[in-house]
Structure formats: structure tokens, C-alpha cells
Image 1 (cartoon, rainbow, N blue to C red):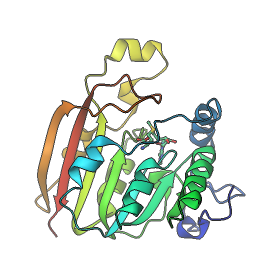
Image 2 (image 1 turned 60 degrees about the vertical axis):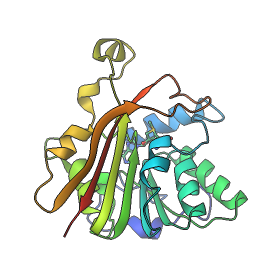
Image 3 (image 1 turned 45 degrees about the horizontal axis):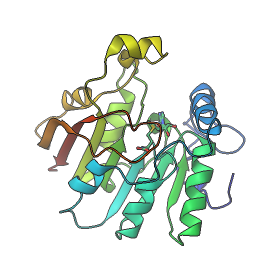
Length: 228
Ligand SMILES: C[S@@+](CC[C@H](N)C(=O)[O-])C[C@H]1O[C@@H](n2cnc3c(N)ncnc32)[C@H](O)[C@@H]1O
């Protein structure tokens, strides 16, 4: 692990299990994603996601949380745009790559090595919570959905983007069951009067050049503002 990953940001006594290197979360989730990243020198395109670029165009930079930051392209893009970025990820392989890219670009980003639902994020403290294709496993208590919402500051924005039109059967044959994951509609179902839905739609994706996700052509985009 690189020395600029800030474990102190996420190690409450209650957040168990916690590994010797500071990771807070299910070791199996970490191992699965580490293995996916380790298979390739670079898994994603290295470009910021199109929906992030489009949906943040009118926002004043503030504190941003990038959930499931992967190799860091979005976090770096936000930091370059003046955002104070915290980036959270389960894979140490991905985080090392992301931190390396930030170091090369001379950008400061706070890295958190944890599962979203177990991270001790300060509640209500991010002006933007961005989760781009975050692959959050569902749980009966909706812990990940609630953690996404809880991180947003009053006046702040949650931007959750996922792949649309996923055909469940072929996906299951590839070992990916869509029913196991959190989708934007599950977050929408939790929104109350404290929230204003600004965008909730399916649209064509800005498909990146290369990277493992380049075959997905459509997005579901949820953008919700926390009013109070
Ligand atoms: C499909 S990738 C997307 C990566 C990045 N957001 C992008 O668009 O390139 C999903 C990412 O979510 C991470 N992840 C999976 N479960 C997570 C969890 N519970 N908390 C935080 N990150 C998680 C994975 O390690 C992986 O990097």
C-alpha cells in the first residue's frame, strides 16, 4: 500500500472486520475486486465518466466523495476541477494505482480503504457524493443505499450512475447476478421530502475509449439534491 492512503479517515472501533493494513470491510469483497484489478495492468479507460462530467458542470466545487473510485480517473478529474476529494474503494490494487496517478499529477486526494457501508464517513459532510457504476452488494437493511444518502450534506448532491438495460440472464451466465446489487431505483425508493430528484433517467452513455466497461452503451442516471 502506498504511504499516502489515509487509513485514519475510516477506522472506528465499531467498524469491523478491519484488516492489519486498515481495510474496513468484508475480506471476500476486497479479494474479489483485487483479483479483477490484478488481472490487468489497467482495468478502466483512465477517462472521467461522461455522466459525472455532464452532471457536475453547474456545481461549485466543494467537498466530494467518490464511492468505488477504482483506478481514480473521476477522483483526479474532480481534484483538478478544484474539488476537495475523498475517494473510497475496497480494492487495494485499485487504490495503489489511483494514488500513484494522483502523485504523478501532484494532486492531493484523501483515500479511504473500506466498504461504503462500513466506512466511518462523517455524516452529512459532502457537497457531492458521486458513485459511478459502484457495484455495491445489496443487504436486507439497505446499508449501502443509506450510506450513500447519509454522506450528502444539506444542499449537496447525490449522483448515482449505473449501467442500464443489463440483460439478466447472460449476466448471470457470466457470474454477475444483477439482483445482488444496489441500483438507482432502490435509492430513489428511500428518498423523502428532504430530497429533490433532479434527474432520474436512462440515457445514452458517453462510451470511453477502451477499458473493461466499454461495451455498456446506456446509463441510468440519478441526481438528487438534499434540501435539508
Ligand atoms: C465497476 S467498478 C467502477 C469503478 C469506477 N467508479 C469507474 O467508474 O471506473 C466498481 C468499483 O466499486 C468498488 N466496490 C465494490 N464494492 C464496494 C463497496 N462496498 N464499497 C466501495 N467500493 C466498492 C470495486 O472495487 C470497483 O472498483
